[in-house]
Image (tube, rainbow, N blue to C red):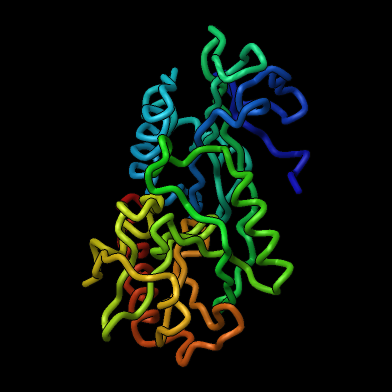
Length: 279
């Protein structure tokens, strides 16, 4: 649920949510034409904001969306929303859509809609269960690697996970190779070391994923989906989950949750966060 007393940023300034008007013809609403970034807020500051803004521009470029604001303006917008809502710990999201359009895939000429809003962090358990789903990520898609607002596939898969008592659904790609979750990257133990699917498998270039690869010895390799249930330990990452150990895959309990590799990854990320909030 949203906080009706919160302030949001739109059209270059802060507003009460009820004062913001998004067109019923907005491409984000009618055809899911948009991109977004969600950042964790730590001590009143968006964590890894520089990296998130870089990925936002990459996603916008991939959709052919021209952002009407520069990084400095977006950084100021994020800071203004966090400060105005007195967010010490939480999450902040930038959403960019194609703007008002003609009720079809063609865009109109009014330019993008840009919104910034905050919300509390989800109360993630430190250990979780996941399921694999029969639907496949298309590693050859025109929007592969872009963080778009077209989340219907994720909504359906996540509902399947919740029905099974799990918190996340895991996809393979069209080749049957392990890919990602609905909003997470996945890591697992392979022959005694950490591994994660390469970007060529079709997964999103997660910010937490990127940081861990820079911090640790992690192999980016293709792994058959079935290997996830056979591993000794595995974990999920995202900007709000950080490192979350997986205890159960498709009803099978993994031997270690969290295992030594998972604990090491969580400690490395926490230490980085203690050193800097804009790595």
